[in-house]
Image (cartoon, rainbow, N blue to C red; front, side, top):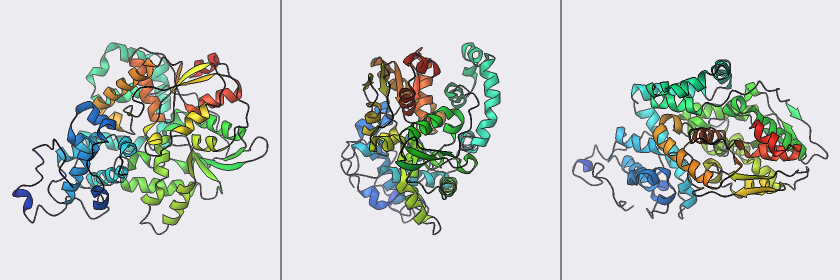
Length: 461
């Protein structure tokens, strides 16, 4: 592997110090280090540079996919250690996987960055503030039961006008950047939804039997998305099985994408168990990050003798809601929606899963709906799991850039396929002084099937 151009001097590839026997031992432990075979597939052609969000921001080689892969190579050869500089470059990566779409060599960057981040979390002692922030995130966000405990105080904070007062007063400037970002991303507390039944019968002749993942953040802050997903599936002739929410929980996506491997695998096993008795044709997912993770359960649990085969079979059934609907002939009547919708591709849908055409196909079945394309559609909005909380600065830069591109298309509404994208876009639009609504793509389909007028639909979003 040739050394990439602009390789920084503080990471010398060949020095006397780095040629000692001690330096040649790997910086990684023996548990699934980043694969040398995968590392060597990168030929440093540079096609990834134009699509990488952090390279677009800073033009720094080590903050590009090929630069990070080269650091992984040096780490595997013991020529660099897992120090703060190495970790910073890996943490700067959003994990958006746009590089995989662009790569002509088919480098599996997702496997490399996830393996490297797991090494970091096991072997690098993070500074106390960073470690505490991450622990708080992982102890709350993947746990719907704990998230629901926040809804009461959140409703008080919002309905008494305290949130508006705090934002206008400038008090947020006194808080650390990550807490300011968390407050700015906070969604409106939804009304208490009616519980979804464990089974929704198909309308008309049954065409499929599907299971529905409720998710963690999605189930608490966006229950209307799950309800819309279930209604649309039933209207299209699918029997919908919804395993008990207490048994579902988080799929592990937040953890695996941040290097928390053990917790991620525990959540993966729990998710497989939750659907074990469902006997469904497909498992439907309406959150892009969850879908990209669940489709990889076979890889994640490859070492587990009790779950490896089950995980492969499970992953083979996982489908994004847009994939399911695009694969069957529309049966439910679509009423016209005279709206211009800017469809925002979620990175873990278009890049990690390769699902880009299907959402547009599904939206295209709605009469009078105009689908708008935006500039830099392949560039991440900055949400990226927990990225906008642990790297709020670059996340906001990317979010502002995305908002400018989307607003330039002059849409009536913005639709996407991931709750993190919804939160990021809503926050960016609000700060830009725009009231353009942001919704999940399936809510647009649901509104058309139910015959809602554009005005009433927009008012609810």
